[in-house]
Length: 528
Image (cartoon, rainbow, N blue to C red; front, side, top):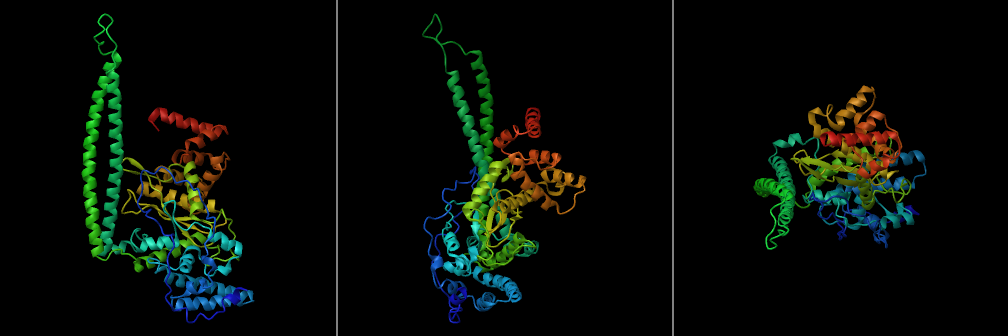
């Protein structure tokens, strides 16, 4: 019986500070945006063959509670009553009390995430598992096989990893409603300037790489033409002499003059970008020193973690919604997700890759005329929510290369729907920010707003878009016509499917064939 397992005397253990080694589950340097990456790495291993033994530790519950002071004592007392009561009404009362006390207790655990965490506290943060006996043996075995480390080096984080990265300063804390007031604070202002400098540096670096590739291609074209103009045939009656340049070779010589101009222009632009990059790099170093001197993020920054945890708690509420199950502890009583619907990192990465294979521009962002692929952070929040959310499309102080931020619940009924909802939210917010004050007139958001208003539809505009995005990605991409004809045309133009999807759809019906033909017409008329 679970009650018997928890009846051991915990009084002496609730206040001790238990150490422990943190296994290889930390985030591994994925904050740096790789602008050259063209897709997600393939997921070759979803689960470990042999489960770890962390959930078999008889002291797991004691270690999870230890060192957290009165908050752990309060959660323990109410948790015992919740488990032992037979009255459904009392159980409901205790359940509600647990939901409040648990978050206060978890905040105490979270503040230690910047350092080494014992396994029990790590899995408490990561999975919401307060006691392994709350799961049946098969479920414990399943969670023990989830890959611990970020072997894929993707910006997808479990909660313990995310808080550790916030604490050590490798990821900046999330923007909150209090951000404008913080501008008067010197350290906060310096941090904002640092973010801008990093964006300029990373953007210059990306443009340098593109310019370098451009010059490389120009030089290759020049070498190819040199070879062509050096090809001569002997004069018929003077075999020791070569024929004059042919008409085609003379045209090539003219092309070479144009190439020389392009190469010189490209070189000048690269020189300018190189100076901009070195200046931005110097600015980053200078500002980093100043931020540190003003008490900026340091390793194990518990205040930054504490503030971030408050944001995470709000994200958890949003993923659950008003009518969802807000019970914060992992238990077989409420756990209904299939192995494929648990938001394990590998499952989420596979889904993101599939989404991008259908909507290839979903993570695109343009900076100084160069299109960058920037994958947002995804934080996996332990909870029974059914919808993912985006709480930041990018850092407003670094629009060039900063990542957006998505939250996905770990235990949804349908992981595909949860992740698509987060990506749809991200799609809307990024497009809205891009169009700024003209978001109701231009681009994706403008066209959608005008379509929505013309039909006098009611409800939240963004939520309606997210639901339509779900239909677009799951139904329309397969040739099932569910959207309004005009809306389908808007999405086809502003959120185009990947070319293979378009090729498939054009054979399904005249509706898609007509949209496909419009693409061809635009390409011929204006280079669309």
